Image (cartoon, rainbow, N blue to C red; front, side, top):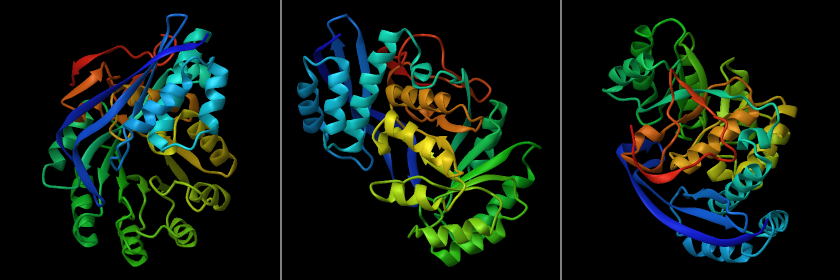
Length: 347
């Protein structure tokens, strides 16, 4: 089976509300879909949506032209040898994986791992810690979510701790919080926050340090039993250093930022050997990117709640995205990625 044609499809997806963090935010998600067609009549899809935004269209077009006429194995070798932006690599990796899984007659998750899960639990993505949070939290609980993810690090430490205590007092038993500071704090502020969050129903704290020194991270993790996690710090050569040192209990894997499913899956395998668990999240991706992240999370099959319930932030999508029911996403049985294109008015 050979690749006979390709298409690059730009998109612009407005959000219902701005996605904000300590590092800034965005109100639209811009990117390109990659569609690879084969001489056997199959179509593989990938998503290229860099964060921060980057004009990757030319690089994606050049790669698509280089893959034309190649069989899947040779195309994979070509991709592995190329120097590419991670989002461009992700698009091609997912599209080639989609085609290979379709050729094998398997859902992508089961092509990645034979013991992949069919059901993946998700956290609710509630955005910033602000005045409207209690209402958003109650709505997410009513929808069946057990883990509520919040952005912190955008106000003084004592103020945010007070808000978290107030929110936690109203949470039902069994509902826990997952926090993401997006590299907001100095070491002293992180220490104060970690000390102050004792007794709160917290499940994980991501990226506490503005300067994520591995020794400092290890000291912070030793300060608390709550898992600390790294996300955007997993880039370039730093990934190998993190895997070697294992300074925290968890890693957050975003295929769009890491460069696709294959490197993300290998990272998860290396992390497990080092004693770290992995959570898969989107970067508020289109339906294609969200489906890819879902299949990766299912392949890990580690029972954790993954950050995949982000499609509702979009006012429309490039196709039908997976929709959680009672906080759970279902992989399904369709071979490959399972993507059907078409403008979808998001939930």
